[in-house]
Length: 195
Image (cartoon, rainbow, N blue to C red; front, side, top):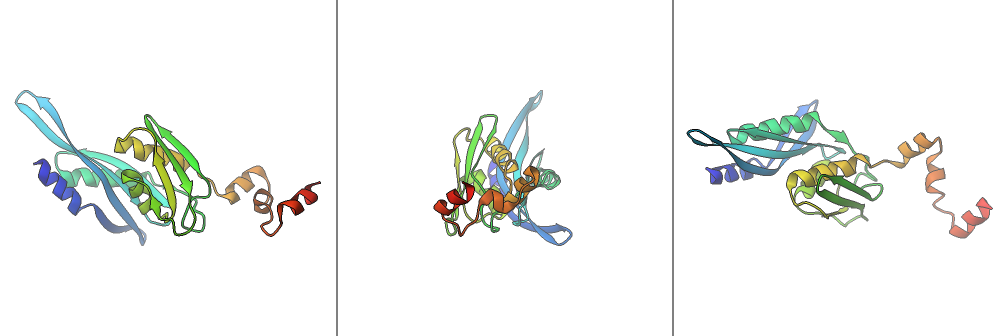
């Protein structure tokens, strides 16, 4: 029975569906777990699924679902993930604007922006999040729990802290150029301009 569940999980792992007005939502099955409830007549088995969904354009969400059958658990998890999607600002559509640290329970992750051509350097559950999000260059390290649920939730806690220079500038009442500085100016010129 567990073997059938694993094979079913592999078969349904990457499915493309477009329900939300034309944009393609991709869902990835992160993990599936068989759980047992002990009752008077023996054990009752159910399946718990963790799914990550995203449009590969900056929106991503995760959800967990539990049911007596694998496809039903995946369906429930996917629905929850779609309802809880967040938008993450991306730099040049390929990486994060800045390094960020996220925690959830015992889960502890560090996400770092990377130069073009780096690729996704992350393991397991973190990789699934970045692939569905659409980030092409990122370096991630999990320092805490190896539990997929805690790793995914810590990653989302980190992504929720991400901010674009435009949003920070508007919050502080400044221009983006004031925050980033002039790119063509050398440090010596900036020192003389400030002084």
